[in-house]
Length: 237
Image 1: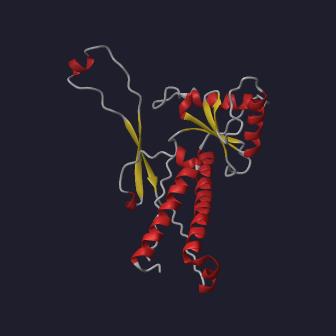
Image 2: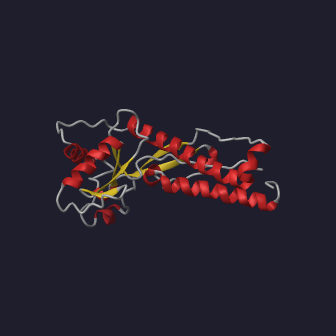
Image 3: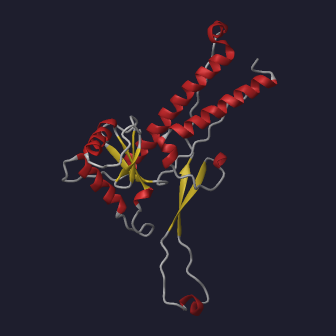
């Protein structure tokens, strides 16, 4: 069945479902930098950080007969982690669900397995390379607000402050629950308490994740600050 044209089409369809579901269910898919250049099959791609522009007195470029060079710092992103899922089934396994039924069930499981591994890898890297935050605040809402401000006020050659709609918070279930309890207790907070994520903590979206490293209560980051491209490829039948 799987070697005939219809079988291969069915496998391709289910593979597409896996990829689509992974992209939609993962928080990291929403946060990753996708503005990359290069050929990923070579083992690496490149992201660029452009320095801030600076204005000068009118006529400066005309007098110099040229404009300022655009400064961009290239960042090489290695694609060097190879993983695979290869499973075998005995004929008796198909008796209960049939071949198509088993494929549907296994692809659903593959979605969960890949999502779990990719989420952990992403947040492990975020915590490993990020700056550990500390504050004298004790209430969850005050701790989170201080952490958001620490990102919002970032200034360097590439960033002159970060708008809140470009900042995201991923919280552990425990810390997420503390923030939700606070919001639920605030009169006229305009929060849909049935929603899993909320874009209302002082203008910053907050999601809960069980995949943060042990001990991490939350991660505050800018959309696109980490690039971890994934190149899924099915085995040929």
